Amino acid sequence: MKLLFERSVSGRGMNYLPKADTGNRMPDEKYLRKSRLHLPEISEVDLGRHYTELAKQTHGVNDGFYPLGSCTMKYNPRINEEIASLEGFTQIHPLQPAESVQGAMEVLYKTEELLCRITGMDALTFEPAAGAHGEYTGLLLIRKYHQERGDSERNVIIVPDSAHGTNPASAVMAGFKVVNIPSNENGGVDLEALRNAVGKDTAGLMLTNPNTLGLFDPNILEITKIIHEAGGLCYYDGANLNAIMGRVRPGDMGFDCVHLNLHKTFATPHGGGGPGSGPVGCKEFLRKYLPCHMVEKKGGSYVFSDPEKSLGQVRTYYGNFLVVVKALSYILTLGKEGIREASGKAVLNANYMMHRLKDHYHVAYDQTCMHEFVLCLEDLKKETGVSAMDIAKGSLDYGIHPPTMYFPLIVHEALMFEPTETESREVIDEAVKIYLDLFEKAHDDPEYLHGAPHHCPIGRPDETKAAREPVLKYSFDE
Ligand SMILES: *Cc1c(COP(=O)(O)O)cnc(C)c1O
Image 1 (cartoon, protein in one colour):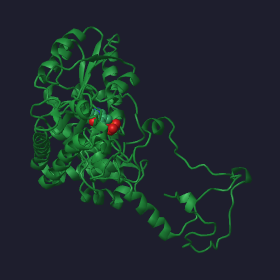
Image 2: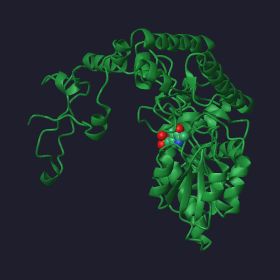
Image 3: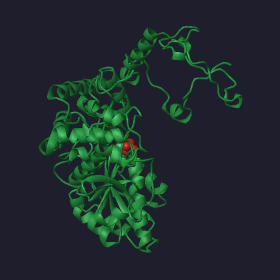
Image 4: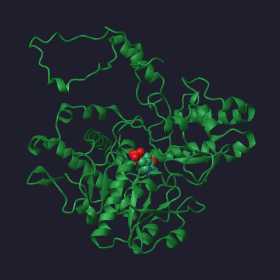
């Protein structure tokens, strides 16, 4: 497919505006570019076709099933986009006086209140721009807490081996050392290993529950107690909140701070690198360390205030504000019961799909799952040579986005499915049929699957090369 720059024809283009009748005012010579600005010259119809063609080459939630585990790729209702595009939200400036943006401040205030109720926290900042950024912010809170108490030798964050890769990475970025603990045979935290890992140097624990295997840890109260008794704090990675919202709360499980991924759980589309939001909530005793620009209500109006011992800003202004608008719109449309119903259906769909697949595929931890489950294709690979990658690539030919592959790392040949609550029984039944067909194909014609996908715009790009030598801009000849 040709790039816009390659479609460009000199002199062509769109010219709607009349010539200026005010005379040209040029800036000082020294501010002028020395070379031509490379803007593609293209007609409106060609431009439209270009983007339509691009859209046809990708796969999104609007194209079909998208069971990418750990990512909660659910359908995001259009109404939230409509609300977020209202002029009152889009035509304001972060430096406007607070009196002139009371409505926007009310959005921040109300969403904070609702997310605190959902998570069992007391205060929440919207500054962090994504989950990993929220982890980093939460860990800075934990570090500040220990420092303020003169407890600065606490420099270890404990992370289970099933954790998302961002957890240990954020801990290191925030200046901690990471100690990994193994999972037990049920996929939960090994309590014995946890007891052995805690000590005077324990700053805290990072955990997601349900974890990345889609399993709710039944020992959660014991786990957070062990950490607290050792003098550490508990951080909740809220990426999997879609499984529990409206039912159980991290705050009641013993967690001191959490991040949420509004772009996973609360109706902002993600996956294309668009704006996300990773708000961080905390218990009362950590409130004074939160980033600046908290919204408070004083005598009937909203004001910004900086917490007493704020760790400063982690991002400009108030975070990705329009994502917060979508989250509020989503929460209010669903209501208390709807939120609870959404998590219930997400869990039901995952269990239904897992049960329909498990006579053929090997389920890594065969127990009731939460919103996602993990298959282990090690046996299939031994028998047929067909790998998790082959099955994932094969599903592309049927219009299904691959599940998450080779994660979590503790399951070999892993495929991780998260159907989400927005898929109907018909869609899941159809997907199950496709995965069972692929299972059969693995036995009958493994070569075919090694070469899959056969009907996509591209086959198997070199992923390592794409990551190590990304080509992010067009190189002009001149
Ligand atoms: C997605 C995810 C993260 C990271 O969130 P981003 O918004 O992608 O930075 C962290 N932990 C878990 C379990 C996740 O699924």
